[in-house]
Image (cartoon, rainbow, N blue to C red; front, side):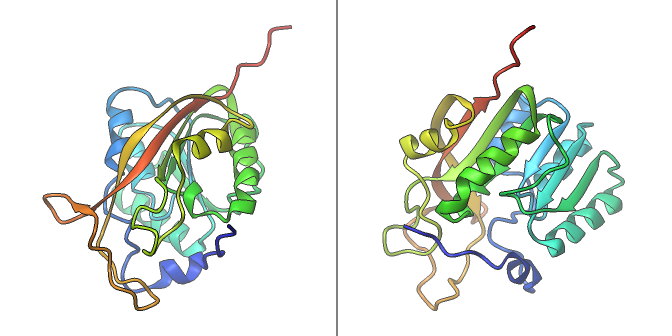
Length: 224
């Protein structure tokens, strides 16, 4: 099924930050940083307000955040300046078809970007981040499971584990797909439907949504 194209400028121009902007990196990705699985230079693909990028920069990583929304990029840049983080830079880009970074990044991280893309644009995204990755680079993608709010609920379709694996395996060597949790703020769906009530909540009131964490790598170039 084809998913509608989001107006990301409209999303980030609202008075209230979008539900996925929780003021911190997603815990599943923060754990990867703590475990030493991230290497500079890092691409934060679809960075939004870029709390992941900012957390990485605060720990000394060099990171580039790309997002379709110029409003989100401006907010991320301002936050980096305010916090004195000089190793994080941000740019507006079509995340499904961007250039200028060929072979640059040793780690690519996706904090809920892929599952928001229309199905017909996902392979363009897979190609673009693969092109930007250095040989041997690691890839981590956090994505919704299939219909996280139920079949009649709001939100993107998400993936089964096999669908997520197959989507990335066209260009990347997939090492693991495991169950994971995505966190978000409560929200009122724009179509007037009831807000999600059938999901778990954390101790501080965040929604806890089922998903997957995919780990993959770009094959090293063969020696000559």
